[in-house]
Length: 92
Image (cartoon, rainbow, N blue to C red; front, side, top):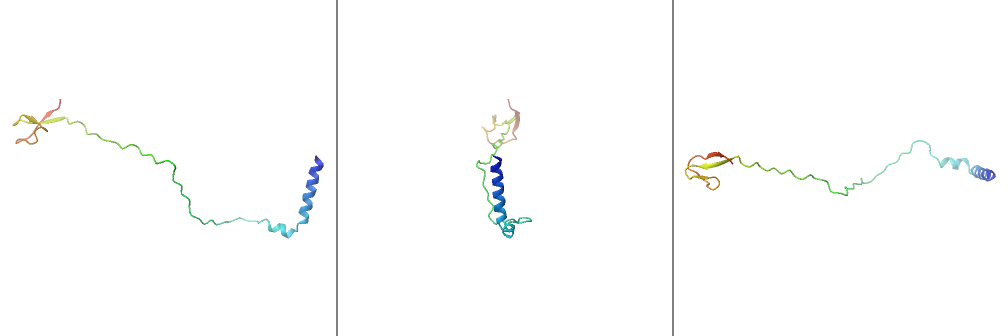
């Protein structure tokens, strides 16, 4: 087994010696490699729709007063107008 490894090493050394040094130098570039990429940026939207929380609904509290018209003896909204000022009555 060791003899096979030595044969491979000797074969590779022979190939390396047969290539002229000037050719071998051109295959390796020393120094920093700088490249320029010109293209359009790629934008991929998310695969799922954005989450929007449910809208907050506000319910006005029930009126705490009813309005009574003493002239007609009726409450608002059954009676829309009253000749005198409405009397606020606490709701029950």
